[in-house]
Image (cartoon, one colour):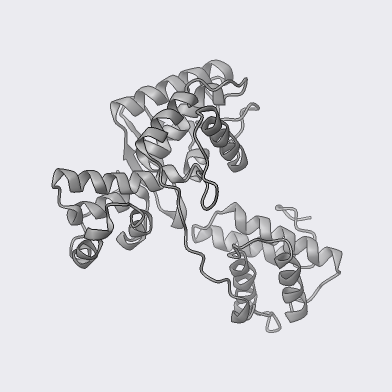
Length: 318
């Protein structure tokens, strides 16, 4: 059995493929999770050739249990291409007719009132787990720094420098790293969280935010804690459409900054590259994905996009 638990005839190739992707900066667990499902399918059906029957058979079986989002198809298609490039002339590359359709994101737009009630409830969260003292810190980083949920979960204790007021995000999406300055209020929140965690787990814990066993918190747990706080705050949920989720703090961070700059008369065109770099985006265009949802942003959107190509200030990783 391989390091990831692969047991099919493709175990070695799957391990080599994942190692190749990690060298390119792709560390996502989603890819591993779906490839393990493919591996299990091959074991169950005794599939030993990466041919059309094997690949489309698994895809068809997967479609029966999947919902609207089908980005996982790209993983098996990419693996087929990798096998071809490494000498397996019979490897089948999933046809484009199976290509997943684009599903536009519809973030839940958090209001200032909802955010205020949420953090009030987070500070009073009744639980015996570390979330009792770290819920405010975790969601403060997402709200005040706009970091991704996965970045907050993977943040190591040594990457948070409260003495100098910054935190380091290493090898995140696209293998990009960045240093984020923290203001006094965020430092105060994180310091209280760190002090409580040190008291319970000592100074040598791995990640800054931990589970009851001292390990990295899971994505599922973050979602459950968020929902618990939301409900405890007495906040209503929409009857249909997008439900509130932790990632909406990152959306809010982006469009709230844009709106603040507009209200203050700041040159948004000049500031967008900084916002893009702060959020860890590869290009300024990626930032528009988050900010186009702002209720007051659309009127100025066209003007900003025309000018944004001309100004690309350097903001390095110190």
